[in-house]
Length: 92
Image (cartoon, rainbow, N blue to C red; front, top):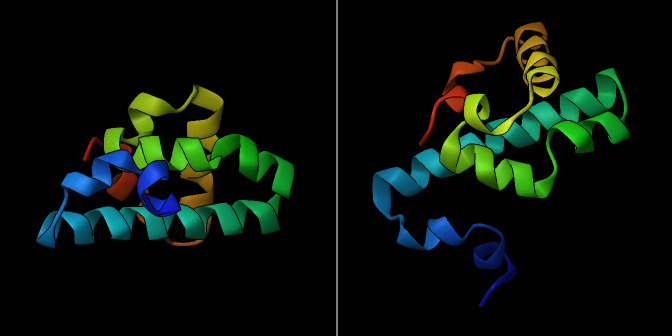
């Protein structure tokens, strides 16, 4: 099994439109992680968006997965860089 499928097991069930939405959510989270790394540092970026958390957020949404301080950093980073936090806030 490819590493990508091991990391994101729910992705195996997705095709077409849903797979494209999951990819878009993951890309946005990757962008946000890059911005957090630049704005704060890599340690904080990994605390807010570890690989496991990215997979969980893609499926379950940031509001359900993250702690309040993590949501604050993610929301503020999204606002600062004109990205839409709501795209990852709610469950898939």
